Amino acid sequence: MKRISRRQWFATCLKTVAGFALKGLFFPGMVHAFSPGGNRPKGRIGQAFEGETMTFIAGFLWFSHAGDATLSFQRLSSKGRYRATLSGQTRGFIGFFTRHRKDTHISELEENSEGTRLICKRLIRDTQIGDSHTIKTFEMDYQKRQLTVTRLKGNRQGQHQKPIPEGVIYDDPVTAFYNFRYRSYGPVTYGSDFVIHTIPGKRANHLHLRVASRQETLEAIKNASYPEHTKYLVFLNIAPDIVRSKEGALEGCLTESLIPLCGVAKDVIFFGDVRGKLVRRYFKTLPPAPL
Image (cartoon, rainbow, N blue to C red; front, side, top):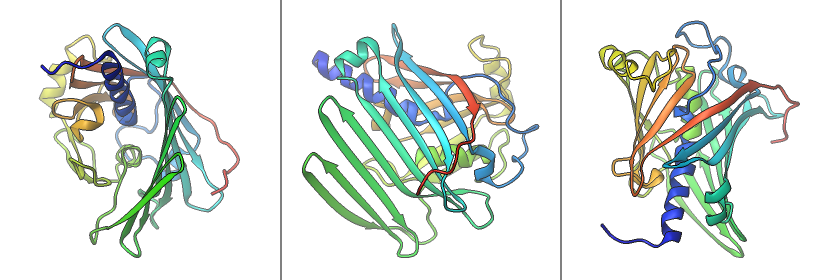
């Protein structure tokens, strides 16, 4: 195996924690009824999630709390517009060696006309590592079918554009998280399989999400590590470089109403499986934020 420096090892750990947190679909937490049974929540999708806030912690090896993150969903002043914000930071020993890296992921969202799914119009990724600050913005113009990517680091700025194929909508991981929970992609049943278009990267243009069969789920629930309220096991494949794993494989368990309960990023390079958990989930309605 190729030798790496201690600084490189901790940087890899950080990227894994941050990437796994971004896939907030698979963190364990309190059971909080979101909708009765497995049906789609009542009302429009924005109303279903407005004011929801989740707080996560993530760890690996002997670092039980290497980082934490907060995911919130807020209504904007314009009708049908929302903002989902995921903000995470490394802590403790890992925080010291990674210069207290902080990642903020902001998805500016718009409901479709039926109110049955969210469409990301602009995605902002803000990364701070010590004195270094990088902001990367993705703007999707679906009328012109054009993606504009802007990168700002210090005084250096770059921009390029890419065409968006006809009929394609790019769902970043946070947008996909809410759409999946609302069942915007279709009914969620044992054996369901979803292929979701995402903003094109170096190694992947799609998120692949599979719900385990009933038999597979029952076998897994026998393992004491799965909470008693587990209804579904979900397997997600993403670009391997996001979580620094061999295959980009994640798995998690959810309640019948798709509340995330537990999760793990499998076979992460250099340190094996990475686990995390949701430590708090609540709803708090705030005045609309400006667009």
